Amino acid sequence: AQSVTQPDIHITVSEGASLELRCNYSYGATPYLFWYVQSPGQGLQLLLKYFSGDTLVQGIKGFEAEFKRSQSSFNLRKPSVHWSDAAEYFCAVGARGGSQGNLIFGKGTKLSVKP
Amino acid sequence: DGGITQSPKYLFRKEGQNVTLSCEQNLNHDAMYWYRQDPGQGLRLIYYSQIVNDFQKGDIAEGYSVSREKKESFPLTVTSAQKNPTAFYLCASSTQTGPYGYTFGSGTRLTVV
Image 1 (cartoon, one colour):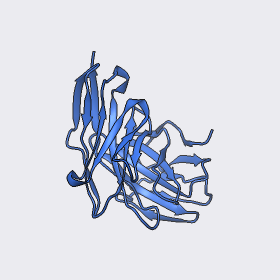
Image 2 (cartoon, helix red, strand yellow):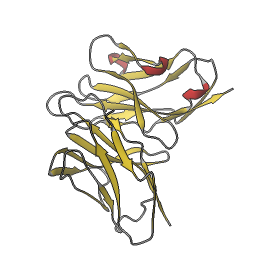
Image 3 (cartoon, chains in turn brown, blue):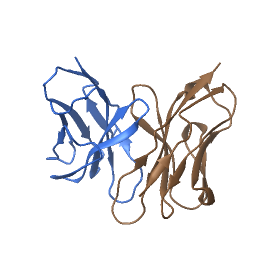
């Protein structure tokens, strides 16, 4: 069965510092991978996704993520964090092949940004 | 613009009442989903539907019911059997032609009073 682990429940970084949010997955093959962001009281917005090809994917708001098959990881990065990036971030995994299937979400990492 | 609309944004329920949360999409998506979100628990799947007039239970379906009479609409009823309904509820939709990710609504916060 698929699973997603986000090891960090809460991370605090200073504005302008770099950011890396971790995501590890368990799946028998290469899955589809996603990162979503949620501001308080809002729905989830898709940041980026990986299907195949280049393992470094670019997303919106200056975020990028790298798929590492050997480590079963899909970590999210941003070179310089802005105060508006404070939110909760969710990694998700989807199965390949056949019908849609359901996405499996991690429990989220809450990001706080210090001025 | 296409999207998903959830209403109302805030909902209050008295003990023993059923309440229905609305979810409408104009994205022409085949699949729709309901999630419950509690602090520290992430997203938990309640029900999902991949086609009109068909739906399946998710991980926490007890105390909830759904219908899918139209492609655009997937309402969720929180019944009196759901003992702890206070939570944030999210509706999502997706295409069936490959997992291109979900589009989410802005959520409904349900509070028992």
